[in-house]
Image (cartoon, rainbow, N blue to C red):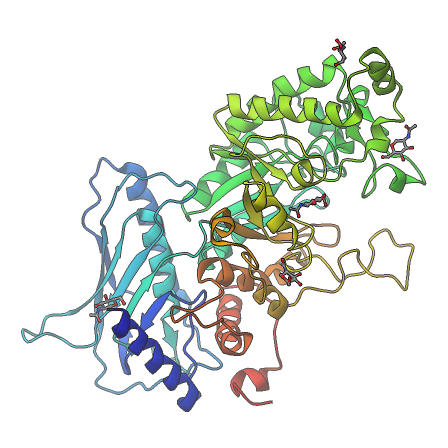
Length: 562
Ligand SMILES: *[C@@H]1O[C@H](CO)[C@@H](O)[C@H](O)[C@H]1NC(C)=O
Ligand SMILES: *[C@@H]1O[C@H](CO)[C@@H](O)[C@H](O)[C@H]1NC(C)=O
Ligand SMILES: *[C@@H]1O[C@H](CO)[C@@H](O)[C@H](O)[C@H]1NC(C)=O
Ligand SMILES: *[C@@H]1O[C@H](CO)[C@@H](O)[C@H](O)[C@H]1NC(C)=O
Ligand SMILES: *[C@@H]1O[C@H](CO)[C@@H](O)[C@H](O)[C@H]1NC(C)=O
């Protein structure tokens, strides 16, 4: 079977090499063999999944939703590719139906590490009895079915004459599964606000790219858009607009459910104790060194400065009320508790903290941080969830956190080894490769000749060259559960975030789904990826997404020529 696969890969390779024929699919399946027939497809294509019992109501609903989305693509998309060309003979056969089978647990829940694999077979010949052509999609879970359906939609093209919808290069035999179980996208909705509909649209694009985690960096120093019911004053005073620039419990439910129906988990992040100035609008008493001007950079990594005070009973009362509420609004088993960029100078210039240390001579600023994080994480655990932390709590502060805590590395790729050596599971996606915000100059506006802190701009090729398990031993590599592309919103908002995300985040998505190496062990190259990514970018544009261009159209239409 390995030899058969190798053979198909080889044929695929030769086909691309000698025909300069572009075969597009993003992210590329682990195993994919093709033929040379073109099938016709009509919007009336019968899509059925016979074996979901009526008792599996949620699974049934997820399936119906996905089916309707495929139907919409069949009706509306009519995508004409600039670089995928195919024959449309008069006598092309018609694909009559797509039959789906869930082979595993039909009520399986979306969670880290569930089976997302699928197999998609599209035949090209009728059997002897002249029966209609039937494609088969098989997956262990409904979430594998969703990925398979997204793959199916990428096989459909219209042509220049726009005389219908075609499925070229049949027969197809696709066998696919993800390289990493955690494939995330971080969006920061605090530095600038995004309406709910923008987030829903982003979730659609994420699902097409086979992302399965929305890391929602929901609050930060600049604003607190979440309308807590326990502490409504947080957003009444801390949101940019307490009426229009907020997320209510209902909004969050809508987003979480929409994501779930697309195979995406929502992991919220309430960053603490740093990055919390926005809390001081309503609870100034628990925030130290608020908005120090003009020397903010002695007190915080970014303005406005402010950290939660670790020694006040009022702080712990706040956590005890807020954390259970927020964890209960997000069903995922993980909760990101923040923990980046704590600056001790913010605490050691605060009277109450200084006095506390005088009374507790065995404590230190570091032990106060440990005390705060322990309390925060124990509240997360009491809600039945596992905390995720930014790298500093482990790498810089050496907190003895239990090994089930997941550590997110954000500074540089080298740190991944540091964290896995300590035995922690890691989420990768560091600023040297996967920060989508870099390269737009400093946002403080005081340095015309200056760069953004994480210059240069991370273009798709650099993103594609990131290997999340570089230099790791086998044991260390096992601890890497995946990665995230990250968009911090200092210079992004609803007007431009789609272009900042796509197709660069797609580049990360392929590394996370398909992996850095193909099934024969060859490193995936940007040269091979470019024509496919061009096609995918144009298809996303056809779906109404403002994905930015990678090349002049001439180059897109003439793949491999310069
Ligand atoms: C399809 O591919 C799978 C995995 O590569 C292989 O096991 C199977 O035999 C193939 N089926 C056909 C009909 O080619
Ligand atoms: C506070 O800590 C910083 C190091 O983070 C140190 O440079 C500074 O001198 C300390 N200040 C006081 C008042 O202890
Ligand atoms: C501080 O540490 C010393 C030495 O370990 C110990 O004898 C003392 O009891 C501790 N004090 C407090 C208040 O815990
Ligand atoms: C990998 O190892 C090489 C050689 O030791 C080193 O130069 C490089 O920085 C390492 N990269 C990572 C990401 O660890
Ligand atoms: C991890 O990083 C810390 C802080 O930079 C450093 O002190 C430590 O030596 C590093 N450990 C490893 C194993 O690289």
